[in-house]
Image 1: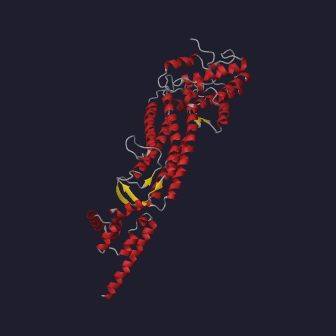
Image 2: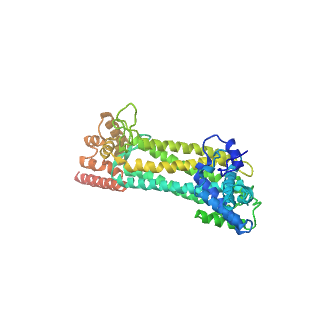
Image 3: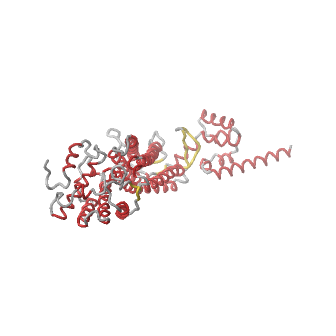
Length: 474
C-alpha cells in the first residue's frame, strides 16, 4: 500500500481509516483529545530521555513534533473515524505515526522511520491500553474546564435575574395547578441554586480526572517501562498541562474499570436534566401571548411560523431541550460501554470519549447562547403576574391557617363557583374585615414567610384582645 508523501500519518492509520469510515466524524475534529494524547507523547519523550532510555536528539525531535500537534498544526492528519475497534489502538498509532514522521523530518529532512520509529521511540514505555485512558481523562479535565466557564456564566445570569425579579409576585404552580404565591425572583433563585450545585459537582469531577493509569502499559504491570520512568513522566506531564497529575492508586483498577466515565456522564446528565427543566419552565411561563401564561417575555429572535404571521417561538429554550436530550442519550451509551468492559481492559473507550466529548461540547456551546439570547433578556410581565396571584383560590390557604381547613375550603369553593376573589368572599362573609383582608391576603406578603408570620401573629393578638374586651363588657 502506497501513501502520498504529503501525508504525515502512516500505513496503520490508513488501514484504520479504510476499515472504520462509518460516521464521517474524524478523530481530528476532537481537538482536545488529540492535544491530550500528544501531550502524553511529549511527556513520555521527556521522561525516557531523563532516565537514559531515549537518545536526547530523538527525544527533542519527538517533543517538538508533539508540540506542533498540540498547537494544531496537523489537525488534518488524524482521519480515523471516532468509532473504531481495537480499544483505541488506531488512535494511538495514528498519533505515533504523525509524531514519528514529523520528528524524523525534523532530524533527516524526510518522513519515515529511519531515525525515529513510531513504536520504538514515540511509543516507548507506553501501550495503547494506558495512553488512551490517560488521554481520555486529560481530555475530560479540559472539556470540563471549558464547560465550567459556560456554567459559571449561566449561574451568574440566573443570580442577576433572581435579584431583578425579587419583588415580582406571581402565582406558584404545583402539578401545573394554582398554588400559593411566590416571587419570580424566588423561582429564578431555585434555578440559580440548581446550577450552582451542578457547577460545584463538575469541579469535583474535574479533579478526579487528574489521576491517570499512565505507566500501567498493557495490563497494569508497568511492563516495558524503564527504571525511573514513572517518577519522571508525571512531573513532565503536569508541567505541560499546568495542573498536577498523579498515578492511579492501582493501575489494574485504572485499566479494568471505567466508573469515572460513568460519574462524569452522570454529572453531565444531571446538569442537562436541570437545564432542560429550566428551559421547559421558560417555555411554559412565556406561553401565549394571548392564550397562555405570558408571565415572562422572552427575547424575540426570529419568526416562528411559515404560515402564521407574528408567531414567535421560544427557540433558545427549545434548542436547550434538544441538546439535553442528546446528553441523556449519550449517558446511556457511556453506561453500556463501561458496563461492557471485560477482564483487564475496557475496549469500548472510543464510544465513551466520543459521547463525553460530544456532551461537553454541546453544553459548552449552547449554554452561552442560552444566556445571551434568552436568560439575560427575559422581562417580567409584572402586572399579569400579580393579577393571576390575586385571583387564585390558593389564597384560601391563609383562611385555613387562621380559621381551620373547613373554613378555608368553604371560601375556596365559593370563590371558584362565583368567579370571585378570595378577598371578596371573606369580606362579604364577614370572615375578615376589609382592612385585615387587604393585609393578610396580599400575595407578596405570602411570599415572605417571616413577615407573613408576624402579620398573622398581630392579627391573632388583636382578635384575642377584642374577644377579651367583649367578654368583659358582657
